[in-house]
Length: 148
Image 1: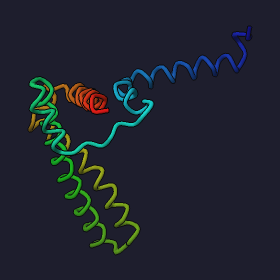
Image 2: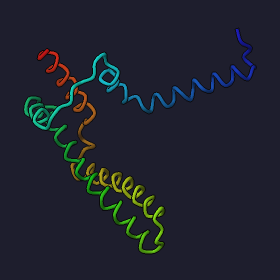
Image 3: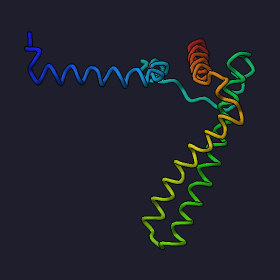
Image 4: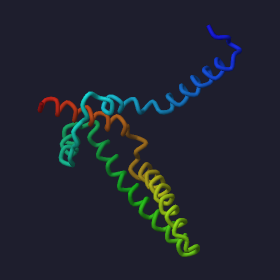
């Protein structure tokens, strides 16, 4: 038994608390772990497979369709953010590395703002998109097991 006042016990206790804190914050990743850490990986799916699920599931299908539409907002925001910030940086500094970094940062910021706009425009806050994605992966897994 380790001495409770020893530094190792203090750091172990601190690390466990830190780990528990972040595991609680990222608990949504547990929904995907059975698909990522499975015995055999899921085969890739096509657009027609996604459309078949949307038509098949009246509850989660529309939520998945809306979540897929939200990606277009993110892509648009990413392009606008990347090009505008890189252009602004290039215009005023003529620095290639600065323009490159601005391009990357603008893309990330634009993606974030685009998704925030999509969240409000498409009212994603009313939908459980995580459950819809998980249901799609379960449906896809079941469909492929029946084929085998």
